[in-house]
Length: 182
Image 1 (cartoon, rainbow, N blue to C red):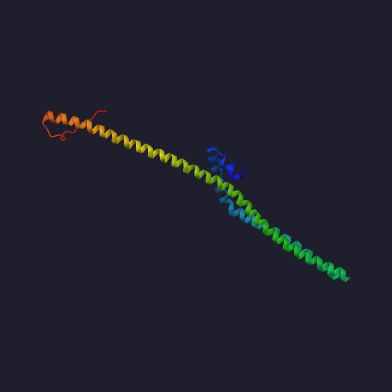
Image 2: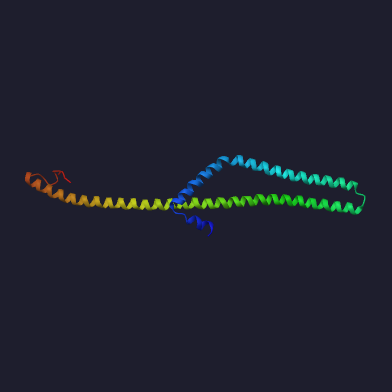
């Protein structure tokens, strides 16, 4: 079962609870994001600086060793070690960059799952709104139809009453307004 199927398996109450939790988490994350970003940037910079210092220390030791070496074979070996050290430093920089990219993709995946819950909740609210809007329109239509029907009945009954009273008092039809009792 993939993440989307798990999200779709929520019932209405679970979806509402997840939405509320995610909403609170996003608000909290947004409030602390700058502090966390600064903290993790400092930690990354410090780790990269420590690695750079270690590489420099190894280079310094190799230079000192190279000065004390008397054999050309030892100097060639030290030169090869320095080349490997340069390659290791470049690889470390690439690993650092790839780690940041991987962390960003992991975060995107977490946000994507949370976003699926938010979208499902919004879709649920839209369906609920559409259902209630349709019910409202049906009720309005029913009330309108009922009122028109009552007006037709009432106007026919009033017309008969008006005719009867008009004949009794010798007044023109329509000049007497009748009062209906329900």
